[in-house]
Image 1 (cartoon, rainbow, N blue to C red):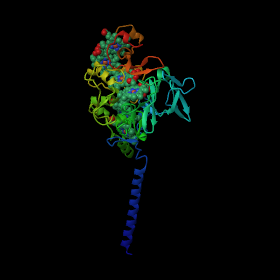
Image 2 (image 1 turned 90 degrees about the vertical axis):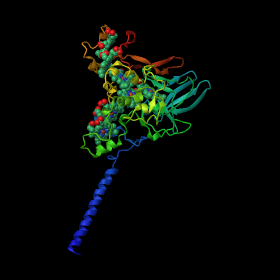
Image 3 (image 1 turned 180 degrees about the vertical axis):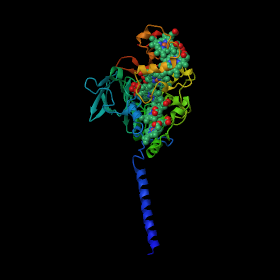
Image 4 (image 1 turned 45 degrees about the horizontal axis):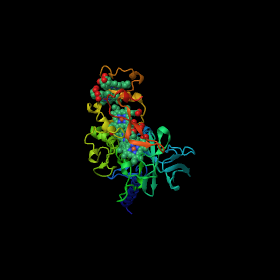
Length: 408
Ligand code: HEC
Ligand code: HEC
Ligand code: HEC
Ligand code: HEC
Ligand code: HEC
Ligand code: HEC
Ligand code: HEC
């Protein structure tokens, strides 16, 4: 062999070797879990959900405060940690007119046992599979029958720390099929399997519990992949910038769940709307031609707030003026007062009220200007013959109320 031929074949061997190394690296990078996070579900538009544990490494503070929010905890797999009601003998029953329930644990699973009183019969036990509600006010429970989802008759009511009949259930044995119209505000995403007879059939493996980051920020797989591959990049890529949206779009992020039931679907499913879209193109409330008409204090904070002078007379106020969506701020009176004063300190006195009560209430602005009211929509029957009692919810219609309406 000539010198040249030897050199050439050496070069060839080296380049084949190099190509193999490069290919191998690239291949192993693409195959690694780190660079390709596990996809938990795919939205109808093709964007992919990867879950908040993937956000943790780069958004540690937001991730850890988010775990304590009512949003994150508003739905979960049922177990003895997530279910607040008692399974102890003596406090594990609910007695209604025609039906009685006993809640029991069997091999780490939780069950509702049902006795039909007038027929002296027992129904097969129903398992607690999913918890709905963080427990601030109460919890309801869902059960799977194959891939069909139903609501259990017992709910849990926090003020009494006891079991109650589920809101709007009768005093006889009953289960309610649970479709998207119920799940849409309490889970991040669910994949309903279309069926002409039933609206409660789901892909059980593609249900994302809790209201997680990606419900407000859109499915974020591309963002995670990009930033993991480019750790030096400081500017956010492949993620919606909420602060650059119009006020209406920013409000819509919250209004999708806080502006009433929006039963009238215009397009897609209740999970089609994503942050950045225009909510009114997706769904509407029935009969709210007049936005001030019968605004219920439950679930329509958007309608109430937008009817307030504070909102109407400022160009920028939105939900995040007072709320940090990543933190649990319930009961932080000082923080909320400071939000009011941020706008109202300009006048010589913050508030014109000269009543003695103002001192007694410790300058708690919301006690007088955003009092709590009974919800018309959320009512529960506590026991056999009791009348229905309502949840109290804080009104977002900020105005001057009479002394009788102030809350102690
Ligand atoms: C490998 C790192 C990394 C991961 C993982 C990551 N991010 Fe980010 N993210 C960044 C960087 C870098 C920025 C830009 C700097 C900043 O705002 O913190 C950013 C910014 C953001 C922003 C602000 C966008 C803006 O400018 O308004 C949001 C929202 C966001 N990320 C959401 C998420 C969500 C949700 C997840 C999990 C599904 C996630 N990120 C996972 C690195 C990451
Ligand atoms: C339009 C959105 C929406 C729909 C639909 C909806 N909820 Fe809710 N739900 C809420 C909001 C918002 C709250 C918080 C109440 C408040 O403070 O205003 C809530 C509160 C609750 C609570 C109390 C949670 C707690 O920890 O205090 C339970 C339990 C509950 N919902 C169960 C259900 C069930 C069961 C369904 C379906 C039959 C349902 N919800 C449908 C928005 C919704
Ligand atoms: C209930 C809706 C909601 C949820 C859930 C949520 N965010 Fe946000 N996030 C927002 C809104 C709204 C803003 C913009 C706030 C503003 O106006 O500045 C924001 C801003 C951000 C920003 C940029 C500004 C900042 O505060 O640094 C990052 C990063 C972010 N979110 C990450 C996350 C991550 C990570 C999670 C989950 C662990 C998460 N968010 C969960 C609504 C939400
Ligand atoms: C996917 C539906 C959904 C979205 C989107 C959503 N919320 Fe909620 N929100 C709920 C539900 C459901 C609850 C009741 C949770 C519970 O206690 O179980 C709730 C509770 C709350 C609470 C009471 C928290 C507490 O500690 O009791 C506040 C405040 C709130 N939301 C503000 C917002 C704001 C601000 C936004 C927009 C940035 C927003 N929400 C977006 C469904 C939603
Ligand atoms: C973004 C600025 C802003 C914030 C935050 C704000 N307000 Fe206002 N508010 C206004 C403006 C502007 C008006 C209308 C002019 C006026 O009456 O001062 C107003 C009006 C009012 C009124 C008179 C309403 C009427 O119908 O006559 C009350 C009461 C009030 N605000 C209380 C509060 C309370 C309590 C808070 C905190 C929970 C608050 N505001 C937060 C800007 C704000
Ligand atoms: C002017 C300040 C302010 C604005 C703006 C505001 N909120 Fe609130 N919100 C409050 C205060 C104060 C509370 C009571 C907190 C507490 O009980 O600790 C509250 C409570 C809530 C609750 C829990 C209600 C209950 O009684 O369980 C929800 C849900 C909520 N806000 C949603 C929203 C949404 C959605 C928006 C935007 C449409 C919004 N808020 C805008 C001040 C505000
Ligand atoms: C004890 C109940 C009470 C408390 C607490 C209270 N207010 Fe008032 N506020 C009133 C009443 C009553 C009026 C109407 C007085 C009148 O008609 O002269 C009023 C009037 C107002 C007005 C409209 C009149 C004006 O000054 O322009 C604003 C704004 C206001 N309050 C803001 C606040 C803020 C901010 C706080 C918390 C720092 C607060 N209020 C605490 C009862 C209260």
